[in-house]
Image (tube, rainbow, N blue to C red; front, top):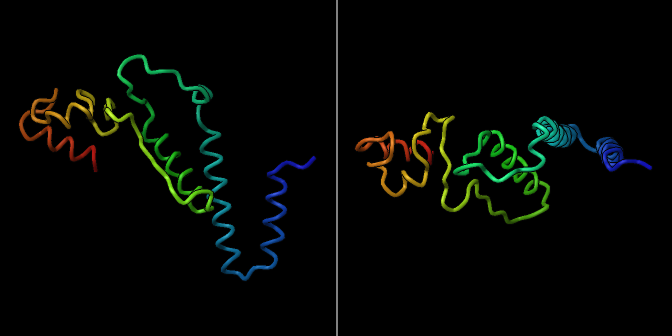
Length: 136
């Protein structure tokens, strides 16, 4: 029995034979982007298959990497017309996330939105600058 991947490869090969050069390049670029996404997902650590509840306040340790993969999956779903509508949220509504990859780990996003001037690690307008950086 042929795998779905084999069927897709055979269909793509048949299709490319009937396409002009510009369209062949577009199909190849699309298939390459899907392969890149598959490799990125396959490269995730095995423990990512099951997500345990956070031990404390919900900080994700690898947020940029996961957000990139989720964004890529959403782009593919839209590009392949699997959906025309998407709702995408990176955190819980309360956003208890810290942002160590931006250099902000002393307070949570939620803290900055309610009292940016008094958040831990931010004095005066510094909290507003931190919030601006996070949102950017």
